[in-house]
Length: 288
Length: 172
Image (cartoon, rainbow over the protein chains, first blue to last red):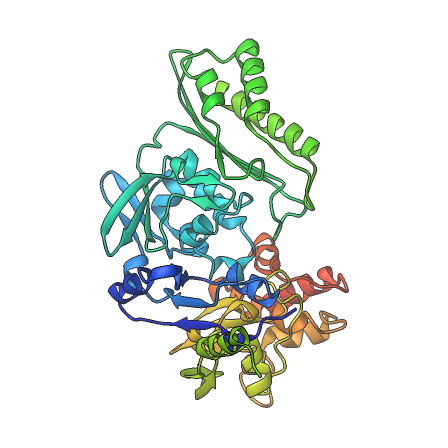
């Protein structure tokens, strides 16, 4: 059933301070509203119980991509279109550009934001695996100040995150340490465009002196959260890549992910395809 | 006798109702001042207040692209844009695509000549997406055309005719 629209507040303060003031009111009375590509869907379906929103779409403090000597700092309102068009991201963080290109169609990419994708916390989102593989760090702000946390520690459980109601995600920081890495990103959906992932695999790796010297493996749609596979990484780090180490890693990996049956795919399919993608990535890494 | 709980609920309900806000924007090059609830969908205001019914509602959840319009030079799904976010924006709908009363846009003409429209529900969105693509890439590759139309679904599945219409529009 459609929502009763007059029951919804969407106020548009022009200053960041005013937004943070509203978010700090008691009882979580106000929540941020960015590109709307998820919240408007819930609204139309009559599944948006919270009524009071603060429009952050025009906050310039949350916009823009800043490049420093050691980081790329993406404002939380950076859209997928802006991600795809940025030359430094194309050169150094290609998986993020690919994730942005494969999220929705162009109309969604013009409106959907990277920050929104993170705090919406869908396990099926396509950019979180790339952000995890690139060691992203989140910058959260509130009236109390600023705090930074590794993105790998942000998602705690299904839609559970390390963010307080009075905090706003201001930016995503990417360390510029991707030189010499093998990047591997694969989204598997039903259709080439506009699909929601059955599984989504992002990884970076490096081989030095015949041993794995750097490894990040992250997936979407195979766990209650966007999952960084720490155990699988540990099984391969400082090991040579061969049949034995690959088999051991695949078996650890199969236990570390926990795909489920749902409307988009089955547990068995997701498990098998995810393992295939791990093997394909390791083959490519070995050949690098 | 109204119970205390019911009275409390009525008071609460009335407290949370939003008021209509004034929105200044431009629609098809015409400055407009609109009154709307802040969370009202741009799609509904275009169709119901401005009678611009060329913009269609398909899925209502950002999947099908039938409600595509151009805001500040970028295509968006108007079913996903609340009115509070179009303050000061330049909006273009299918009604504003033709250069004059007597002349259609090259993409519109190509859709007519090459059978790009069947039932018609997806057509305005397809044309908007194609027009916006050609504004950004005047000579798109086939892959760019496919990518440019990928966010628009056609339930008649007339995709090849739509694709060919855009190719013909590019060729002139």
